Image 1 (tube, helix red, strand yellow):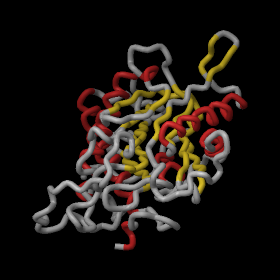
Image 2: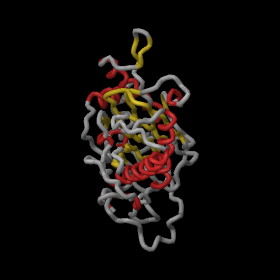
Image 3: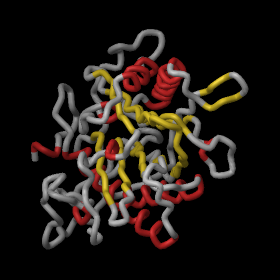
Image 4: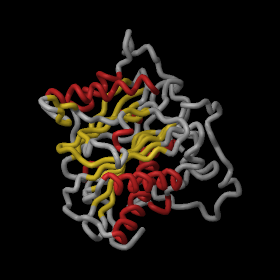
Length: 337
């Protein structure tokens, strides 16, 4: 890793002041929602490189558009049904008087992204009456958001899968020598594989810190099948997606936040083979809280982008390595290998 970089104290998105994370979901349904609450509105943008995204309120994150800051983000299972999660988060924020001011009215700004977990072995009737449960998941995740939260089979990671292993929700953080912190949160539901060949070594191994996902490093020599693609057997459009969030305490405008989100997509490419396919909805939100008071110079932004990519790759591997076995799983968990 680059000289002077180190993990944050929690190795988590919540190493950034003013950020809390909450989960809600249903183990029988094998689906859930993760919410990132911002104590204060923060600059944000997004980069979408997958061919099958599912989103809400992403257009407003373009640098040229009016809304300057957001109140929360939602990552959810449930495919398009999961977009309801953002409404639950909005309801929670509205009760607190949060939101973008339009005259006397405040509208909470909650961009969201979803992944497809409707064919993962779960009972899709569980908790599902006339309306899907994701609005309630969003509210509950926002209500219970805290600085300490579970990874692996939790929240939006409950129903995640990859080509060869059960997926999950991961997080990681990096503190740069400048004092800037960058952190990632990601739900790994990829078409491709996060491990090399048929072994247990993660593609993200070069970026690992302190044995955070097993400490196996890279295989030596690389197996002959390392470059062979392993993908889900039924790659229908919309059945896969890795969705993530990068956050930093640097001072960035929306254009710089978009560049940070693009760097997060580099982390996908470092940790998942293949990534950004026609059948993935790969998306990264980027949030800049500005609480460090440091506005990075151009050269420092290069380092921030590199750290962001590495941190996202680490979070992806952590999410898969932390997944736990549950009833009716259709894939093994990494820890059982």
